[in-house]
Image 1 (cartoon, one colour):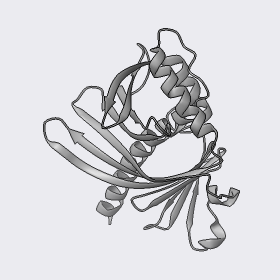
Image 2 (tube, helix red, strand yellow):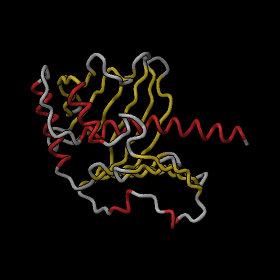
Image 3 (cartoon, helix red, strand yellow):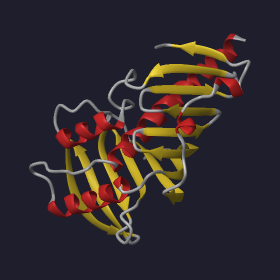
Length: 230
């Protein structure tokens, strides 16, 4: 039994790391402007257009395929994520978990264990707090560079400035020029030769959502174990 709970905790930690990586980029989509010094003008225009596109959406949903890749060993694992985003609110399904946030509270529902963990939305640190806070992180701490086109997509590299507390030395974004949609991004980890690749599919814009989509409803799970960490 102890091995089961140890495995479950390891799975939760892995999903939490992936979740933070995803929130980091989803938050970036809503950055209103990138008026920073020493930034590439072409990259800035592409990012501004992308931001304007996502800011104009009331809500959207997407499937995200995540891969962990080692330069030496190739593909190390993958994960499929379903996301619904509306401003600072989100709902995500990944590997037996459903994560809800109404921008004030985060609910992590483990379907296998029938357990929900409740936390303040800003309790996990800068990568998984309110997206509005992460917008400010990007505005102050990243350089941008347009590197060209590949497969018909504009490519922009983001590099953290010195002193920035982030585990990646580069984030490479693939953006569709005609629509300004982000279709893929790669996150290159510091200290090793690993990268995470996120590919977006089944993107649907201006979907209908309600506030209940971003909260865990205990009435629908009468036997759920509640772990309230607020």
